[in-house]
Length: 219
Length: 219
Image (cartoon, rainbow over all chains, first blue to last red):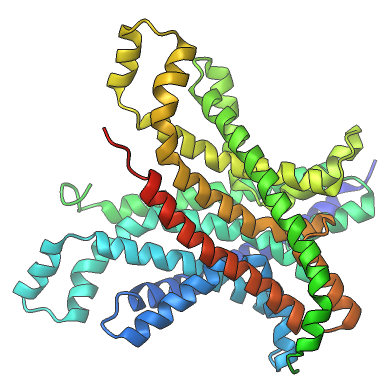
């Protein structure tokens, strides 16, 4: 009988790295999503073009390729990243590109009359966005953001291939040390699933909190 | 580090071999995902509560966990119970199962979008279950699904680099082996990225066309 408790500790360390990556990646993705999403709605052609190029580039090339590029190619042009930095950068930029389209779609889904009301109240472009449009659009974005966060969690498994000791990496370590494959892989599958459930539960309760007081205003 | 065109031409034949496997895996994976998705969608509609709940939970589980870990599971765990799969077959099964859970949702939405009246009309015409599906429901449900299905097949295409982790010699793996042999990462990795970007940009055009062709059906 193998001594499982030590290996369980390894897996838990991996889970911490996965959670850390997911959180940091989500923060970067959120920032990029709003920058690029609002950028696509900008009045200036240059900003729109830049945001579109960013979104198309990161959605068009696969996350795996981006990660390898960040980790193996950037050092040759003088930028050395640790595996963690490369992981957060690639995950954040990739998921941020998908989420940027969510931001754009949500803002465009807000009815014309809201914009007209902003004009009628003599709010500036930024003021209207900040106080009228975004608070409503945020609620529309939230469920899809939750899905994006789960996609990001799932994508973190890829960082094990650039030798970052996340859940998947630790499972491989346990596999090579014990020769047992079923237990480590089943364990991490369950941990990933539980993490995904926590994210969707968190997003749903956040949504309920934000929707409070908006009854009857929006569906 | 400079970009070297001679090196690019030198490694091109190896990369093209990888491209063939990448495309093969995508095609086979798409066929499998289309079939698995249909099976899941039908099982979830089954009047047998036990069957529909179990399949629903399994699909949810597969969707909530990383494809990479599932590939490891198929490739490393199944041999323990006597099922030894070649890497490409394991990869195709992984892709097909994972994306099958996504296409199942497309089928579900497509089937639910067929108005109730059509079911009632089929019943009124005394059609049996098989005739109702093949002559009434499917012909109306399938065309609007096509763009959404294509969307997932393109997403799957971008996930094929993960197969390199279970030693399938697709594009990413060929690029890695070339890069490790010559210790030049810039050209192979950038070419892989460019290849995915070009295909994705083309597929956007294809998707737009599919949406125009099949997106709306006349009622």
